[in-house]
Image 1 (cartoon, rainbow, N blue to C red):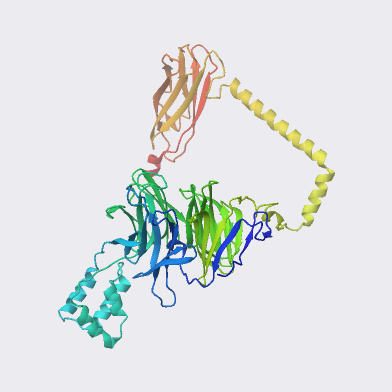
Image 2 (cartoon, helix red, strand yellow; image 1 turned 90 degrees about the vertical axis):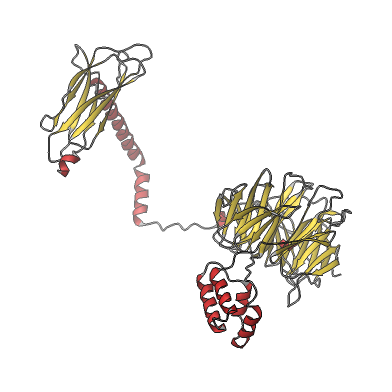
Length: 593
C-alpha cells in the first residue's frame, strides 16, 4: 500500500511531522475504489468478537452497480450488490438477548435492508402512497382502448405540471419514451395497477427506552414525501409518523422514544425543523440563509454546515450562537467523539483537501490530505478506539489513528487579537467646522463648563420651587401631611354629552381612619353641568379604595373641552388637602349630531 502523504496541523498553528503529529498514518490506498458519503459509513462489531468492521454503502460510479462492502482492516472482507443507490447505513441493537450482536440497516430506494451476521435478515418496504385519481382514470381509459397513446401522453404531462402529487414510476417511464415505443409500452402495462412509491432520503437511530450505549434502538427514516417514520426494532412496524413542510436530508436525534426525544431535520427548503415527542408537526423552525450540507449535534448545540462555506451553531430553540467561516467549500461533516477524554467535536472535510476539527467555534486540529475528502467516520475500528476513516473524491481510502497521548488544545486559530481588530475603520474626513469647534472647546473649555453648571443649578432650583408651590397649594393628588394621608385619582368614562366622573379616594395610613371630608368640583358653568358638584365623603377606612361617582353633562355643541378641578377639603378649613385636574374629553355625541 502507498504511504500516507497527508500532514497534520496542531493547535499552535504550525505544521508538524509524523513525530509530533496527533495522528498515526495507518493506511492510505488511493486506488481503493470506494465512492460514498458520510451517511453511508458505519463502524460496528458485526460478529460479536470485539473486532469492529467498516460498513460502506458504495455508490458504484461510472455505471457500476451500487454495492455493500464490509472492510476488515485495509481489506474488503465481503461485497454484495444493491438494487438501488444507498441513502444511509446504520448499526443498531434489535433485542436484549445474548449474544449482543448489532444488526446492520441499509436504506436503499424505498426499502431498508436489515442484516444480522452479514446475512439478510429482514426487508422493510415503505407503505405505498395512493395514486393520483386523474392518473388512475387515464390508465383505465387506456386499458379499455378509449384514448390513444399520444392523448395519454398529453394528459399525463398536464397532470405532472399542475398536480401537487408526483406521478407514478410507470407514468414517468412512459413520458420518456419515443412516439414509436409508446403503443407497445401501453399494451404491456395497461393491465397493471398504478403504484406510487416514495423513497428514503435519510436514516438514523433513536434509543428506545434506555440511554445506554448497548441499548435497543429504533430506526428513524426520512422520506421523499416529507414524512418521518419511527420503526419498531423487533417487528419493524411504524411506531410514529411525523410530517414536515419539505423533504428531509439530514437527521439528528437525542433522547429515548418511550421517554422523551427531540428530533432535528434539515430539509431541502433550507430550513431546520425541530420536533418533540407526541408532536406530529415541527415545534421550532431554524431558517438558514443557504442550503445545509451537514447537520451534527454536539451536546446541546446543533452545528450546521452551509453552502456559504460556513459553520453555524444553534440551540434547539433556533437561537444562533456562533458562526465560523471556512477557507473552502464544505463537502462533508461528521462527529468526533473521544470517550476517554469526554471530547465531542465536529469534523469538516473541505474542497481544498483539509479536514478541520472544531469544538464550538474553536479550531482544534487541521489534517491535510492529498485529495478532497468526501466522507468521514470516527470511532472504534479493529481494536483501536480512536480511528479516523476518510474516503476521497478519487475513491481513495485513508485510515488514521489518534495517538493515546494526543490532547486537543483550543485556541489554535484564536491566539492573539481577533481579525476584526486589524481592520481599518472608515473614519470620515475632518471638516473645517469640526476643526474650528475643537479649537473653540479647547480654548474656552472652563467657561463652557461653568455655563453648563449654572444652567443645571437653575434647572434644579426651578424644579424645587415648583414642587414646593404644589405642596403649599395642595395641587398634588397625594397628600403631603402626615395628619391627612390621602391619595386621589380620577377616571372619566363615556363618549358624551354625558360623562361619568369617578373619583378614587384612599386613606393611606396604617391604622387611623379619616372623617369629615368634603369634595368640591370647580368648572366652567357655560360648558358643563354637574348635579353633584359638592358632597360629603364617608368614613375612610385605612387601605380601602372608595369610588365616588358623579355625572358631568357637556353643554357645548362645538366639541369644546375644559378642565374640571377636584378639591378635597376638611370641614371648617378653606385650604384644600389635595386636588386633581381632570382633562375632560370632547363630546363625540354632540359633534356627531
